[in-house]
Length: 244
Image 1 (spheres, rainbow, N blue to C red):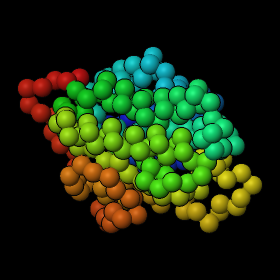
Image 2: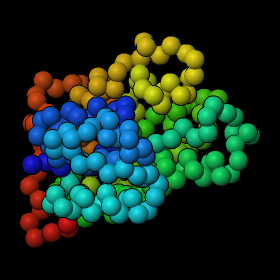
Image 3: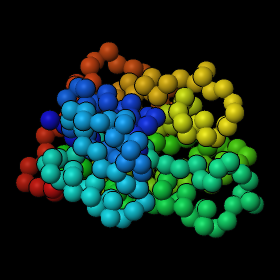
Image 4: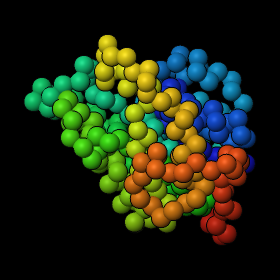
């Protein structure tokens, strides 16, 4: 049975990806900062193990890695948890160093630290890393400086890991979506014209299925396959390497 760890699974794209994979027979470990929100979103969903906590907390990351090890393998690691920073969003000159540090810790440092804990499991199962990026990582938008800079860092860290380690990794811009985070970025605006996160999931799974060389992608540019989710290629563990 394939195994995925998805951070930020209580809402938005993380929730959509978690429920899709679980419905198709995957075992999914996921988290969220709010225990109540995580419980309300996923409850006792078959195949899903929920662990409340903040991905920027080292003890929480250890708990996530321990949960994965009980399942014996890791085929997909999705870095979905992120923060916009202080709300309402503001210009860089109005941010304190502590604000920038917090955004860095959640959006870049925590994914790297979690990946380091799980590298042996990923390499053993020949798994895939998906880091959720943004167009703000490559474009400059007013008030998006802290978020965009940390997403650019996440892209670089993800793809450098792919260059250094025996692991396939993608930094993926999912595009604008109708999520709570997007609404937080545009308070008072009507974002009902944005696509639901569920529409992005098939593109992500098509990318994992095809396994092109590691790199940065826009989800919308990845053609959707007609194959079911269960046909995502899960490789046999590397012989002679436990890594778990």
